[in-house]
Image 1 (cartoon, one colour):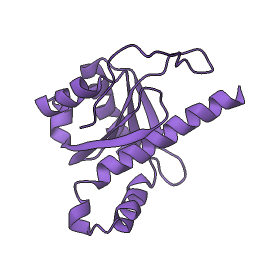
Image 2 (cartoon, rainbow, N blue to C red; image 1 turned 45 degrees about the horizontal axis):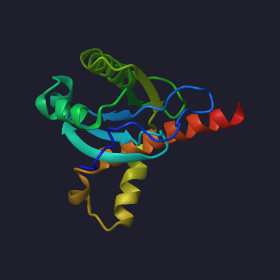
Image 3 (cartoon, one colour; image 1 turned 180 degrees about the vertical axis):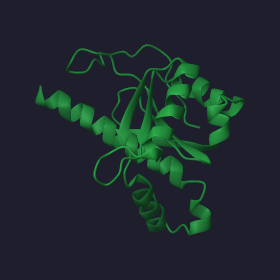
Image 4 (tube, rainbow, N blue to C red; image 1 turned 135 degrees about the vertical axis):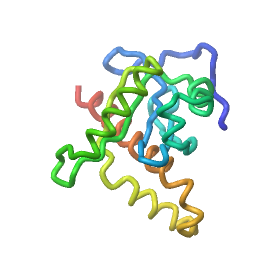
Length: 163
């Protein structure tokens, strides 16, 4: 796992709107697995971290608590699988329920991001790197979480530039 900077920054990292940047933990919640990604402290870059069994994330098991301790996030971002028409279906309702439980267990504020097609995009990226379906199995979810988080980060910084 990458090292994290835990000291005081020697320069001001406030965003344009005056709020302090935070480290964001992104979850791509599936029925079997959960992809995990994090942002850098400046909210600029998303990185894939790991894939955990969904049951361990939902149970707040030691493996998930270790991710929380290692990365010290201040915000939880969960992917919301909207339909191609942009509506919430039964899967999105299930994800919302799981995400709200995880948020409550961790004490982290919760936001959502549309995660349509991130798994497909993640598979394409991993194929281009030469991975076959078997080798991709453990990686797709964390890459998808990273893509979803990067989209969210980029949109926040685009909003800041417009103000």
